[in-house]
Length: 527
Image (cartoon, rainbow, N blue to C red):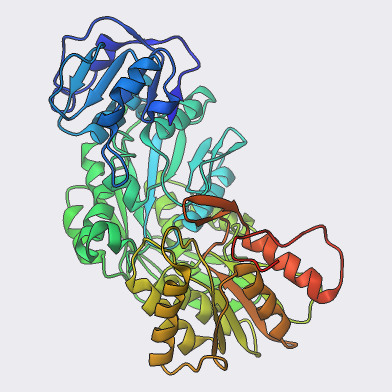
């Protein structure tokens, strides 16, 4: 990956002078011009500085010579090396150095923005979208960076196939683009990987919001405490943010209903806090929640207001997401509560989140991103309130990721859905048959009967087709786990895939109508 500046290059010595000694101790670099930052030697262009990252798949130090051959004018690494042909800067942590170099290269754009970070296991993108809509309603010039896209001055840029925070050079480039477009605020969705891998270091957060911290990414973080501490880094950033001329809210927005609350409340006592609750009293809480197929309504009660809220989002879990967004807007950004309520009402939905697919069929079809045990449970509970018929759930569990999820999600669906269809979801280099076998075993132990209450269909397109074919009038079919995503990984290849297109294609075939949507191809398909 390479991040390039549209302006003239930056002097290497000047860049280093703006970065703390603890991050990059070298101060003897020649006055060479740096025109870009690269972390993939294959993408290095003449004038780039190459940063050698060490990851699970590769060690960037092995490719220093390749980077020089491709035109790198300086190298950054953590190993003790000499005679690289260009200046070599040894640092304690290359990821942290990459973040600070990127911020310096783009002129520290976050210091000219009010930055709101949103983290959590589930609900990050929804909460970010809600807050973005509120800020637009308030007339605030706002940018947005999520795992789906970056929105800069009305232009939407794809941030990648799968859900993670972009690398540091891209994050800083997006922030610089916002400053150049005259924006004053940004909402930055901050994943645990993005936090742990320093991708959002030097983003100078002013407001930190958590949705929830449940079972996810334990393969990477080791255990729940490791995952919790990675998320907690967002809140620690609040005290580290530089003083900005327009002020620093330094506000932590915490979920009092979540198990993360005691830890996050303890580590943020040096800054302002506001807690929200969907089930009890807090600084802002919900009363009189009403769910309908058209959305949710409730009263948001705060320190100085009682506010009627209506949203077209479906599912009681979105009450928490709405409260988080309102808390950040009102207590962090000073937005009038009534304006916040108006902004909430303006959001028609979030792509791939409880998204209805309607081609005129006599049952409900939904695509949802639920890919964790907690999210799947919440989605199925929401589905139960949307139908008097059966729920047919289609989902899988990713390869090379937290294996315990497979058991937990299969058990959850067998308990809450009437029929569960286990299928592919990014198996990567793992055996799909083995993944499905683990899930099927868990479903059976929970009381499921294969062939009656659950099925195994490896091809996701065939699984969605079967769900649609089995649906009776009044039933609800929900495909979970992929949502807005645009690809699925088999081996090391990303195949184009969109559950919404697949659902429309299956419905069109079922109804014998032509919509222009064809079932996307996966290597599991039997042609």
